[in-house]
Length: 436
Image (cartoon, rainbow, N blue to C red; front, side, top):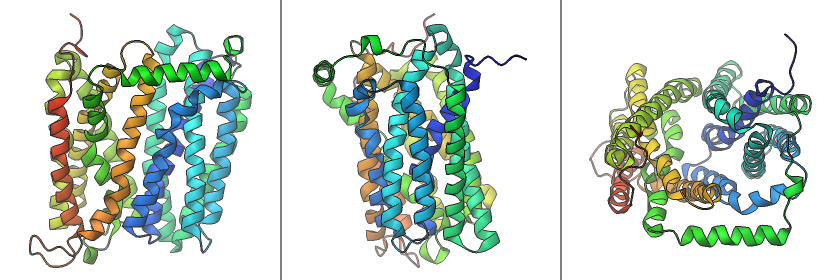
């Protein structure tokens, strides 16, 4: 078959895998790596939470990506830079100052990844016409999810196997980032060949810095003048509070020794849980959630979805108290918890679209996702400190450290915030409902 370089199949799958992998490297692999390297929960959670910052502030520099070069240039350049930061992580892991130096590399990786998101999504819209954009949106999502499986599962499993084979934890994780770096070098050179130049570069419509600042100011002001903006911001920041609290501590809990209140799972076992059981359940929950909202509307399904997001967190309370050794039971519980999260998260993402409706829809949606990232960042910063502070609080009278037990009960208390914001948020009863 003749090679058609204009076909999106030649560049779209690899582009969206390249969009997903650094995100999961920064927000999942880094957490697991630091836990295996012996970094305390308080330090790990606080400093890795800061890695969300580039996604929080992304809307503030996204308009300026248009001023220099093309979206294709930005996309490929960011891929080369991501490769360099991944190589830096691989090198710095073996330094005495590995925590500070790898954090710096991860922060640069996060910045380049957030910029890559802007450029790749912009390139997608410029390189394809409207009909192709609609036709390939599922392909985008699929390959981003494949990146999730690889980043949260395959690479963690690889690190676990190397830990077992060599007994050298730093070397195992360094090798993972060497593999990632080589992948990004390869994909960068591949895209120089495979990514066609945009049908329209946007140069002819390029605005001055002053015009961009004025436009940004208009979208910023109109966002905060939207009706019910206070309740909307509360919803964006607090609906996912239990998840934001728990996210940084789940993996350390999995691998912590039983004498410390953990489950003593191996790195390889955690990779399997994250990359297969968790991802499959998350996708199924999202699909079911989308079907339910299309039939009844967002307002009707908000409370069931809020409950599904929060109540499965109680399973972690059970795991922390019982410390079961049955992997089938653990995997079944994670499946239920992740299915519930996927189902409940659907309501959150649909609400962001709902609140963004109107003039400046795209820009306002980017502000919503920034607040979403902020809602994950701030609780994550204090989660490790809370877990360690609760370690010597013997509420239930059990033997041994109760830090994880008490922490997961604290997560359940945080669910109150989810229910409060569901009470005050304003939603059109017909939004999301499929028209008959």
